[in-house]
Length: 94
View 1: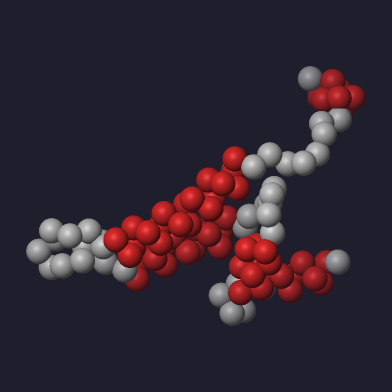
View 2: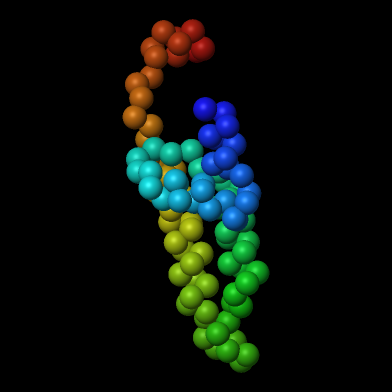
């Protein structure tokens, strides 16, 4: 199991295995935030903010890519886990 997890989160291929598995999953997931933050930084650095030198038109490609990453993270955050709380444990902790 451990070797499978290590292989999943290896940085080779720009985290391709993680990205593929993550996109195949649905419902509650634990994202590796570093990978998603890396994507945000890569888009921000690679694409200019403005489409033209006069800075009159916003680069919509960049805006769309940033939105797609942030939308996915927001969706993950709004998805509750499919487990029941252990009331005995909660009472012990309170």
